[in-house]
Amino acid sequence: MNVMEKFQLQNAVAIVTGGARGLGKAMATAFVQAGAHIVIADKDIAEALAAARELQQEGQQAVAIQVDVTQEEQIERLVAQVMEVFGKIDILVNNAGIALHVKLEEMEVQDWFNMMNVNLNSVFLMSKAVGRVMIQQQRGSIINISSMSGIIVNTPQCQAAYNVSKAGVIMLTKSMAVEWAQHHIRVNTIAPGYMKTELTRPFFEGNSTMVQQWLAATPMQRPGTPDELAGIAVYLASDASSFATGGVFVIDGGYSVI
Ligand SMILES: NC(=O)c1ccc[n+]([C@@H]2O[C@H](COP(=O)([O-])OP(=O)(O)OC[C@H]3O[C@@H](n4cnc5c(N)ncnc54)[C@H](O)[C@@H]3O)[C@@H](O)[C@H]2O)c1
Image 1 (cartoon, rainbow, N blue to C red):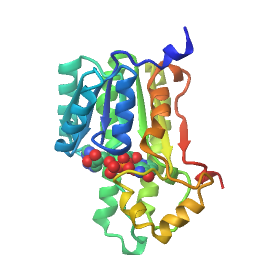
Image 2 (cartoon, protein in one colour; image 1 turned 45 degrees about the vertical axis):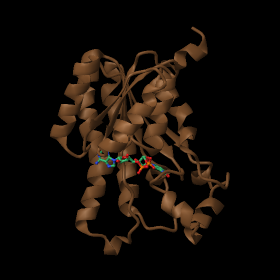
Image 3 (cartoon, helix red, strand yellow; image 1 turned 90 degrees about the vertical axis):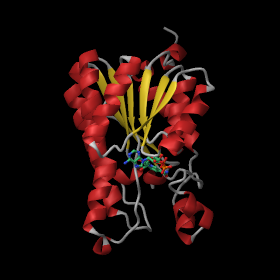
């Protein structure tokens, strides 16, 4: 087989959580361009519907389903709906996430739990529900979006809860990869550095000392753009990465190297 054919996702079905905007939308766009049908699973249904409409222009099916990825019943409903419409799930991207900058000694307990629920427990809940389908199918690729903050402590902001949640995503990825290799399900994580999205836009627009420190500590001296995750996402979703599982793919302009 020609190597470029291995990157094709012709008629594959992909769920992208938090796919209404930012990195999730960029990965969903890349999947559609590679031939996949897309389910945008997001809490913000208005933005998810707008993203799905935009993706339909590429000629593949794109649907938006409202889900809060911290809620198990909503996830069960999502998976049932996707199976009803498409009859299979080939790719799951656990991308929905939040960030919070707060000193540990000032952090509210509820904010800590919320961070773990949205960033980490959601990956468990979504993967459990979709994993059951993939085990039945004996096929699937799961991509979890962690962060370079799951590997290093980036500064100057205080974000212990975020860092811990993303480190957890990395270990959950490795654990799932080992448990589910026997079912031909591959599980990998992408660990991005600073990327320009709605999540980070307020910081970049302010061009604060903090942003200047971020960029000074990045060998490439710039943030990434969402489309710069497209290549790795298609690689991990497709047969091009058929021997890759449990991997941590760092895309950070070199930040975590120095
Ligand atoms: N932007 C960065 O610099 C960066 C760097 C490293 C990792 N990441 C990670 O990448 C992922 C996407 O980040 P982004 O910058 O695109 O963020 P974003 O805020 O632009 O988009 C996040 C999306 O997730 C959705 N979402 C949030 N909570 C949800 C919930 N409970 N249920 C369902 N959907 C929910 C939002 O509605 C939104 O559409 C996150 O996990 C983030 O931690 C981002």
